[in-house]
Amino acid sequence: MTPIPIPAAWSHLPFFAQDWPAIRDRLEGTDWLPGPERVFAALDLVPPQRVRVVILGQDPYPTPGHANGLAFSVNPGVALPRSLGNIFAEVEADTGSAPVSGDLGCWAAQGVLLLNTALSVPPGAAGAHGRWGWDRLARQAIAEAQRHGPLAFLLWGAHAARAAGELPRPQDLVVASAHPSPLSARRGFLGSRPFSRVNDWLRGRGETAIDWSCDAAGASGGDI
Image (cartoon, rainbow, N blue to C red; front, top):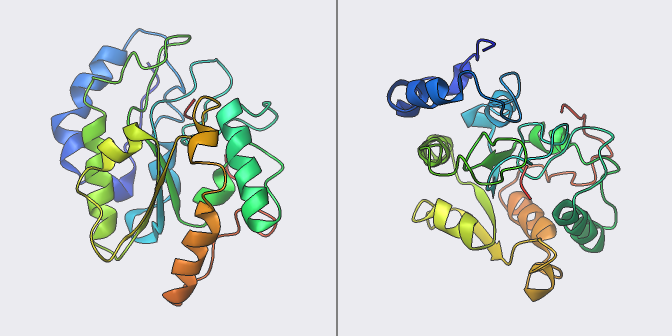
């Protein structure tokens, strides 16, 4: 297997010494997505001191060519999955415009940690690596980012709420709603205005708002 570099800014997390070796060994010799070069993309793109917003997904898209290591994000040129289409519909309804590409690297460039709770998946087998211990990395990464200041959490669906658990603190912002999946988007996600709520909170703290439409942000590039 291609060597997998550990993200330097996060390498001190206990996960990389205690859990990663066993997961790496289980991946060895198997076919999995998004692959060695993108498995830690969410952490590679946003060091802990730059995290401002946390969006938790479940696991990468299981369709080859779709996942790029960022929760809910797809590779450039890939048609929007239905959940991401609903996210973009809410971005447009909430802020007036939406990104033109499903690659959410432009959000990561602004301090949005797009982290799945499992960072690998076999092709065509969604959720198959969900009990491998990846979730410990998500919790440790969030706790580390919190050491650098308050965070805004966008928790979409029951899985994200469970994954975050008791991590959000009184000084953090929590915007929780239904998942953007077609099965639940109309039961509380659409119309929840999460993006403007995050920006109002950031501005209230004297911080720059997130350009959710990516008009002024660079792209660098999943969850179903």
